[in-house]
Amino acid sequence: MLGAVFGGLIFAMLGTSSRKKWITPAIAVALAAVVGGVSLGVRAFPASAVSQDVPTVLLRIAETNPAGSDESRTMQWRAAIDGFKDRPLLGYGMENHNLVWSAHFDPGIYKIDTDIYDRTHNQFLETLATTGLIGSVAFLAIWVAIGVTLGRAYRAGRLSAASLAVLSGLQIAYVIYLFFWFVDLNATMLWILIAALIASRGTVGSVVLETSGSAAERAPARPALALASLVLLAAGIYAEGYAPLRANKALARIDSSNGSLAQAMPQFDELSSFAGRQTSHVPVVMGQFIGSLGSRLEEMRDDPGERRLIDRAFDESFAAFSREIHRDTSNDRLYTHEGALLVEAARFYRSPLYRQQAIDAFHKAIELSPHRIQQRLLLARQRLLLARVYSGARDYERALVVLSDAVKSDPQLGEPRYRLAEAYIGAGHGDSALAMLQSSLELGYVGAPALYLSVGRRLEFSGRNSVAARLYSDYLEVKYTEAVWNRSEAIDKPIPTADIAVAAHLPLLYVRARDSELAIKSAAALSAFDPSRAPIVDQFVSDIGARRRASWIAKNSLLPCTSSRAARSRDSVAFGACGMFRRKL
Image (cartoon, rainbow, N blue to C red):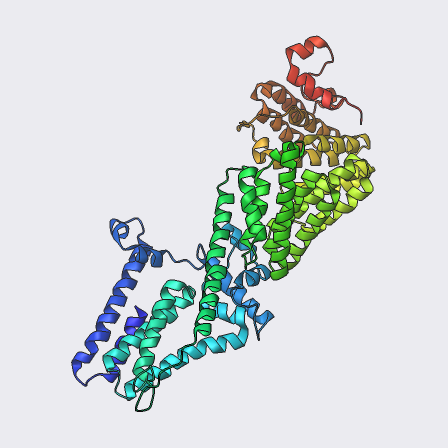
């Protein structure tokens, strides 16, 4: 629409002096006003009957929201501007917006769209970031050349005012198109054809020069040159056409192999022997296939035939990653996928060396794209696995080092803090374990109840009842939300015996700490877990409200706790819950 308006204005300025010359721009402006008015109407009344019948393109205009779903585009624009600031002269290299996006990744993208972008969706900013000032000047020079040629052709009389208006409007339209998109095959062919038409109008005489002289001389035959040309043409078709096609088909077959290693291995062999240029998809697809085998890898280890196949698959996949990373050293996603493959190798071969290499690969990915979350999660998971190995061997000092690094690498993850608390307990550092448990709960992570019980009982043993009560309260609230304190809301999911034990024990801790208000409030958790316990809770609340605390201080639980087998048969839940706080540390 803006191209039509611009073209109409050119026609009006260069056309005849008649009043009719303003008809063309008036039509263009009126049509643009209709488009804008309909889009605004759809935006204001999206549920109306008229809005349901308008063309899709108008709906898309009406739904445009730079602060909402369309913010993913502006994120790419900001990343491109930051990328240009990094390398203003030469940029990151053509077709390398993915590297720009990795270096200036915005985590807000996770709330909106995919986190993978290989285009800026603004050709001018992409050119600026990927080719720098030199490439941008060259790109803009094309537009300058088109404009100069249009002016020369009009002054030479080889273009009429109407032709000039149409051709100029098309250029403006394409400029606006590129402001929201990029140079792609379909539109660019038309642009080149129109530019060729403009060039032909700006050239006086034939574009193809004819030979001079009175008689055409007969050209000598050059069969060797013709044969060499045919050989080069055939080589080009094979290297840039047939071979990549075979590689693409091999990748497609791996994707559709339904997890059959025997079916996929010929494709692995073909890709590993392919000498032409490959994309980053090749090692990624190979690695993802091995990862998709999952638990079957364990079975393949014990089968000699399949063991040889999986060995070859690992070797060829690692070789493909090595080649691609050597070619594209700044691509963080390559390191992330290589790290995931190294994790599978560590599991299959039971090799700590592979696990350490995986950790190193994730570190490199984080270094290249510090704000992307996938590699951080994978790195934390590997550190947790490594820490479990150390903890299982009671090597708590090494486990503490690994888990401390995991916490530092991503302070916003709760699980590494929980695992670090486990290691602190093993090493005998109770206060440090408590601090890690509290911080993991603040981050919304809840682990197995045994660790909270262990730390809580240690606190009680040392007389820190209020601290223990606070830990139990935070644990229940994060796990079950604040509904746990509301007696009118029953929890509609299975409750572990350990959590019932905590809910029945927590009010008594507050009684010992002389905090009657919190004792009464926390007693509601037992009713929320099991409404049939309401009479016991009501009796407790009544006694505490009347300051009759003496009968409760010596108890460990609100539940009727006895050690007889008869009681166990009558109320097995209460028997099991009571036992939680009778066990020694």
